[in-house]
Image 1 (tube, rainbow, N blue to C red):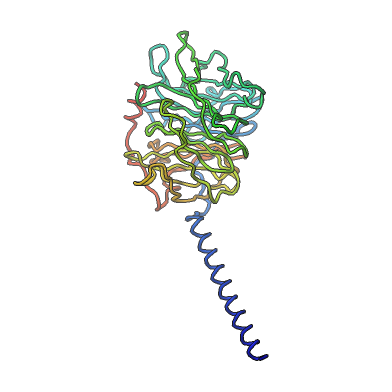
Image 2 (cartoon, one colour; image 1 turned 90 degrees about the horizontal axis):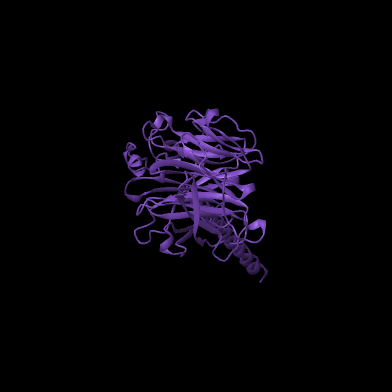
Length: 380
């Protein structure tokens, strides 16, 4: 009986060991599958000159007449803050820098805003300490906001007016331009984001009229990173620590949440969102995995069965430190950025420029290299 017991114990032990190995192998395979081709750290083509305090969020203005003279804008987040302007070599263009801003947080750019009967390109910055939008024409950086446009008015408690995120949307239907604003704190009842219609006030400045409140919030951290797909008409924002939420950009299409994705394999915070456009509404959505120094890349167009199902395609490791804000264009700019430019904030007081082909590798497509005719038409 003793020998039978020993044999049985050995068999059980061997079976348990085999099972453990199988489980370990499966766990390893699942991990490898989930990480989806993480690359070695990609080096930037250009690193900008350093700002004074704390970089936070970039935007790209494409010069349709001369793409090689396009600009990169970036916020320096401090009570003595600034909106910096860089050339494509990362050099600060001092004559265009807007200083004296009170903790500028995020920035976005839109083309063809109608002012005084003429289309102008604009940059909109969130000035956190004044709870105001600051608006400047491009490329000259002339203020057209009358000293600042207050937002989140009527909210009780300063914590619900602590302005952070911004994204601009130009409706393909009627050319109206909207600002979508996010804040440090907000309710979890679907009214975290407020959308404003920007208009000429008749005196050479801009006015903002609230048109809707929307946006689910987990209540865990905050909502800062916001991106808009003008062509397809969608708003994306990072519910930090949870994922990326998707809504219609047109106010009259309602406040239904269309998707919640990017919910797995992030180290901690979901941050910057940027959209790389390809033909026929295809392309990629890049989301910052802040603490890991990675960007998760998802399909822009979704699947044939569900246009709101954004599959993870690739994870790229980059050289940025704790990247918060980011921006991308698929338009050709110069020899360094033939297929587009990706800009990511780095916590060493710089912004880093990457070429799209370095991020795409052999896995993703590059834009067709079209000229800026469409951009010129957008301005009219």
